[in-house]
Length: 381
Image 1 (cartoon, rainbow, N blue to C red):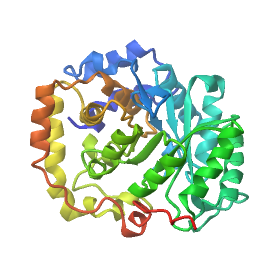
Image 2: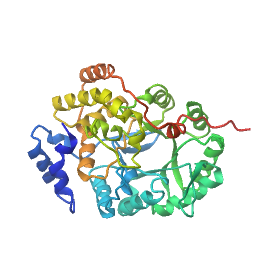
Image 3: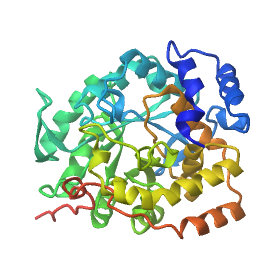
Image 4: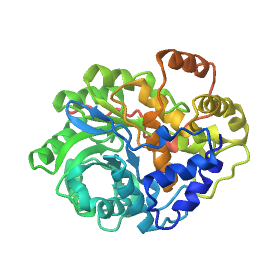
């Protein structure tokens, strides 16, 4: 089932004010695809826990592309506000952003949208890239110096229109700054009430242990999906060992797992997928068996490839909370419907048996980006 065709009518219906009653939306999609279960379009109802105490919806919303999409277009700001607010109305309580998105502009969009119900949701954002705090210019490398972190957080609070950040991540481990110094700065912010919880994104394993020893890590954020299962080797086991939540970014494989990318896809200049060898013309053909497997199961379970992909993630661990990003109302509604797609134990066993026979070709990121992942912080002298 092709996501683009599946949601074409719903997307057109929502393109204007996007205020159709939920039942009307469900009926619109159902009339176009008569085997899509209405249950799979219901609002979120379940909660999950990150770390010891941070409760969030089972599926969050990533807003990274709400200032500029992969295709380099600029979305309608009012419509982005509408998607964020509708997500909240449908049960989403975890919203993910970062200072680097924009830079700064996506935090502003999220802050504008969430202001009316700030106290009812969880905002997670990220610091760590070397960004000029006055101009937003991207400077070379990373910057997690303690004094810089505190300046960054002050800017975040203003852009997000809030007095605290619920979950603050180090976006990438800085190879020049001991993690002990980073966590020390975060502890100061926690004491001041400006940060409530913290996490790490794409960290090295020993850095996780060192950070957690100083102050409990609430969540780790890494790429994770059926397209990229790298975290299964070390990150997910250490999360289970230490009681850390796990928040997969790109849970739909930057669109590949929805069936919207194939060997005929061409990428706009600036779209990072055009630089990832897993999507090269040679490798994407080799990787299509994964999409075919997902489509087969989506047909069997009367749902969509995107929902199968997210449901598979949810079935891995009870403390995994994916954050699919989108700039399309219909896609957001489809994504949260994944909560109602369930695998029996036998189904999951059979699905994984078939999944494990599929080899993925190509690298997940360009080398110059991959170099920032799995980095260990230097030892404190």
